[in-house]
Each structure stands twice: as C-alpha cells, then as structure tokens.
Image (cartoon, rainbow, N blue to C red):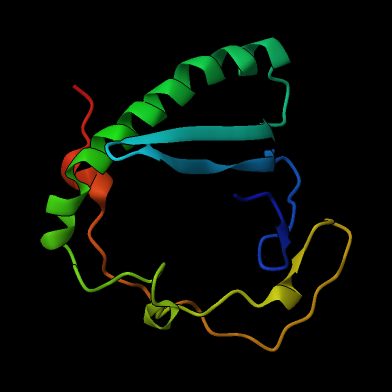
Length: 139
C-alpha cells in the first residue's frame, strides 16, 4: 500500500499539478492450491480540472488492463526470475537493498512543513532487469 507524501527535494511548484494518492495498492490472497485473489485498491485525485466522472470512467478502463498485465507477468515470473538476478530478493532479505533508504526527516504529510536532513548522497542505481520490458508488450 502507498500514499502521497511531500519530500523536501521535490517541493510543490507553481504551474505544476501534482496528483494525490490517498490510499493505493495491491492485495493478493491465496484462496486455493492454484488460485489467488488479486485486489487493486485506489483512492486518488489526479488534480487539475479533470472532471470526477472522467477520472472514474478512465479508471474502469485502465485498472483492468493493469491487472491483466500483472496476471500475465505472474504466469511467467518463475521462468523470468531464473534468468534475471535469481538471488536478488530484497522483499525476503532487506540487506540486499543497495540504495540509500528514505530519510524520513525529509518527508512530510503536509506541504507546509519544513523538513531537515543531513543526508546529501544520491541513491545508487541498481541494475535489475525490468520484467515489464522483457515479457509484457501491448499487442
């Protein structure tokens, strides 16, 4: 699950519309030996002058396509993973994370809160194969 936050390195800017994610994420539940329930939840506001009815209509088109691509990726994940850093599993072993962690002093839930930090290093790039480029293409 995720939600929008403000970061001192990316403050709100004039003439830039920033959407807000109030609560967004995926929930996967095993419901049988070969079955998983996949739920996508999103409460968000893209900002700007887009009418709510249009946002809701687009969501009913985009969300099912995202889920279809996720299902397609899941079906070939084991084969893909064997060829793409098979030992790299930071969701199981957090010590494999080689980027700088978020300095929570730089993050706020309000745009008006000034943050402070002593962290000045940029995150290190990790070279991990991109599953979407390798196996998911629009046809």
